[in-house]
Each structure stands twice: as structure tokens, then as C-alpha cells.
Length: 448
Image (cartoon, rainbow, N blue to C red; front, side):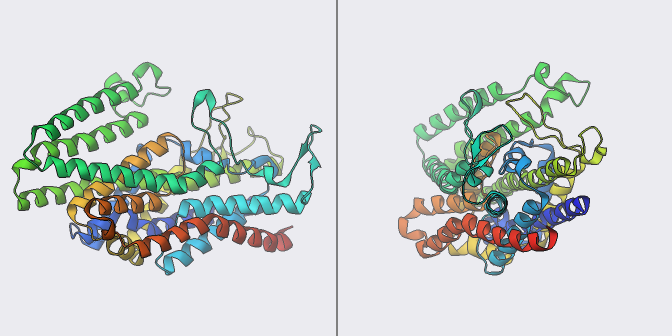
């Protein structure tokens, strides 16, 4: 029974990943389609390719954060099953209505809601004694907040909720600043060029200090020191950040010497780069969330079935990292490959209702705005992934599109549409949690 439930959860999690792909396809392709740089079919092929390519770029930090949404030693597989079912239902509903809600928050809200329902069902609303004699409460089953190690960023559901506001805000500020930078670079003045050169120097220095040297690479991929360093996943991510910033900087240095048609032609080519960068961030961020759910399901299966880690088949050899106990995580190769493949396949299916909302209803998007918005969104996703924060790609790109709209004038943003989106964002976690709790109680009747 437990093994069957595990297989069902893995299957449904990959279905959710597929739905996430076509639900969030608009995030990466809306501006490219709106500006007619690519046809819709070309755009989804482009985005799907870079969704899958993210497998070789990003680690498993976000997956670990999602896996620890609830304490795996205190839940059962029915909890995770209920959470995934609720997430699928809410994703399909918002897709049908053309609302770009967050698949990430849907999944986390569903997981947390089902876990809380389980704790109430088992322990009630009062306090109860744990195995070590301490008093605990039902709401502590969810990892709400955990202080960062060695002064690092804290984690937990509260941090994820905070980034409902922070992710689009960071995206909006970044896209606004990029737009202002490029607008000034279009003028024949020396000061924007000096600023751009200074930014290029700072970028190179920052990336240099972020690099992991050969001596610190745990498992070098090649005998060659050079290729091991260049193709280390952590380093690839920072090389991409440098490439994005230096590419835009190069354009900024030549912007004032181009006429309108030449500038538009270059910007359309740069949109291919910016949309690819955002698709890469989308794949790396959102696929990891499903990886985290599958990892949590395997951890719960090991605990509830009474099996030992040593006795498990190699394809289920999942170990959740534990910094406090100095335990490093492990994940079999099929999990990330399956997750990245599912989200890429979903992206190929498109999501045209949401494309319309993202590409035309928020503000009118040109190639200039498309480059600024996608670049800001991609950089936001890369940095939050580095900090192991599961943010919403939907929220991030929406905030970025609003940011470029504000450079024209405040009225250029259709605030009525934006307010509707904000309501969907605010409601996603509580509605998903409530739906998951209902699903959990229904499943418990039949599955025990």
C-alpha cells in the first residue's frame, strides 16, 4: 500500500510539473510573442529547450527548501498526495481562467495545508507530548521559520510568503533601473558610458570572487582543471549572469550611435538572449520544487515503511541534507531528469490565455521593454535560486513588466488588471492549503 502510494505521488508530481510548464510558459515567452520576435510555436520550442538545459546549471537548494516545508518525520504519504492533488486542481482552474497565479506557491500551500490537517486529525488543537517529553502543537508541523546558518538567509514558509511581495518588487525595481540605464545610454553623453564601463568592471570582479576553484570542487567532472572549473554548475550560473550583464552593457555603449531601426533590430536579437535566460531560470526554479516534493515523499516512505536507507533500492536512494547534523543530501539522477523533462514538455504545450494577459493586458510591451523585463526577471531568479528561496516565476516577470511600464508613466500600467493579479497571488497559498486540507480528510476516509 505504501509503495503504491509513493508511485502515485511521483506520477502526479510529474503531471503537476507538466502542468506547471504550460501554465507558466507565458512567463518566458509572453514578451517575445507580443513583440513578434518569435511566433508562438517558435517561442515555446525556445523556452522548452532552455527549461531542460537548466538541469546542467542549477543545484538542488530550492528542492531542499520545498522538501522541508513540513517535518517529514511527522507526516504520512497521504499528506503529500493531498497536497499535490490540490495543487493540480488550483493550477488547472487558474490556467482555465487565464490567471497567471504561482505554481510554486500552489504546491507549497497545498503541502503545508495537508500537513496541518494531518496534525489536527492526529493531535487535535491542544498541546501533546512528543517522544522526548516536550510539549508540541499542531501548527509546528510546518517549518514556518528557520534562522540562517552562519548569518545566512533564513528559510521556511514565512520567507516564501514574504517573497510574494519581494520577488515582484525586486523584479520591478531591477527592470525599472535597467530601463532608465538604457534610456540614458541612448543619449550622446559621456556619463552613461562611464557608468556602463564601471558596471562591467564591477561585474567581472564580482563573478571572479563567486567562482568555485578546482580545489573546492567535490566531484570534478573532467580531468582537466580548466573544464572542471568552467563547467561546474555553480560557476556556469555566474558565468551566465556575467554574460547577460556584459551583453547589455555592450549594447548600452553603442546605443547612442544607432538609429531607431538599427536599435530595434539589435533589441529584438537581444530578446532571444533575455527570454532564454529567463526560461533557464524558470526551469531551474520550478523543476526543483517538484524534485523537493518527490524527495519528501521518498523520505516519508522510508520512515513509515520501516525500511532502512541501506536496504532501499538505488533508484530511491534519496537523502535530505541536514546542516545541523552535517549530512549532505543525495538524489538519484532520474528525479531531476524526469522533472526537467516534464516541465520542458509542458512548456511545449503552451498556455495562450496567460500569454495574452502577460504580453498585452498589463502594459504595451516593445522589444526595449521585453529585454529589460526578461533580463530583470532572469537575474532575480538566479539570485533567489542561489539563496535557496522558491520564488514565483510568475510574480517575478509580472513585477518586471510593471517596472518597465512605470518608466513611461504610471498610467501606462493597467492597474485594474494588476490588482486582479495581486488578489490571485494573495489567495493562492490559503486557498491551496484549504483545498489540500479538504482533500486530505477525504483521502483519509478511504486510505486510512
